[in-house]
Image (cartoon, rainbow, N blue to C red; front, side, top):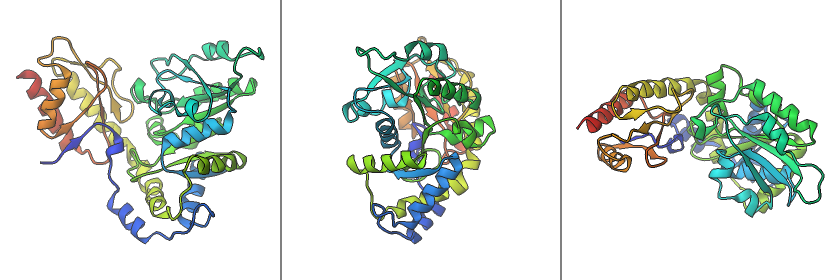
Length: 346
């Protein structure tokens, strides 16, 4: 029986083309900047993001950490949404390792931050306060339903923080999903930002890796910090080769995942006991909720689904997350809907 894993797009496996490219990859020592495959990936990534330079990293969490540490000194402040990945899911690294104070603001339902509230929270030069140095936006915004953030909003946010001597970093783990949903090149969504991290290992199917992009000066600083936190890699061109395939072959097909997520949402909306409090998905992610009068509690339902070969991500007592990706096809969607319907009607 095929396992249908809808917990996240991080569960994707490399495609056959990626495995072939990895086996044939030309490699060198990346700490010496001599790995030609990594160098090519970094150049490709920077071009796709409209930035001067890129830096290959093991994870997006490291990318966000290095961005914060590059933009901020110890004791300074980074502002971000309370649903932001850097605040929720990165082990507090920017504070524990970077010594950077975190100020969280409420995310709006569309994933954005209220810019008037951002303005109100930008610190003065009062010696009692940590200086505000950085604003972080996440695109797509995961915990708000995988919603894409528009280029127009990002430009306004960048203009605001730049007026106050601050920088803007985009946690673009799924920036290509945002680009597909908004029908614009990814670079348009980040061109106002000072830096951006995007993941190769989520919907793009590479086995590992993210790229941090920004100015040449910024990337040089981040490169030193990467070494400091143990991220200097040697013959990692084997990994970068899969990332090149991801950029060449996977970014243009993400709308297929979005269509399947919507089909999944439409089917679930018709099943008694399930609601969609965040509405229909705009990208590859949906957050259904089990009603109080459902046949079984969510934890029990998740176990029953697992017995049928379907994995879901339980977010809270009643809410769960489903994420479509390259390895989920139309038949998987139909089978998932059939099982939900059967289990909740039993």
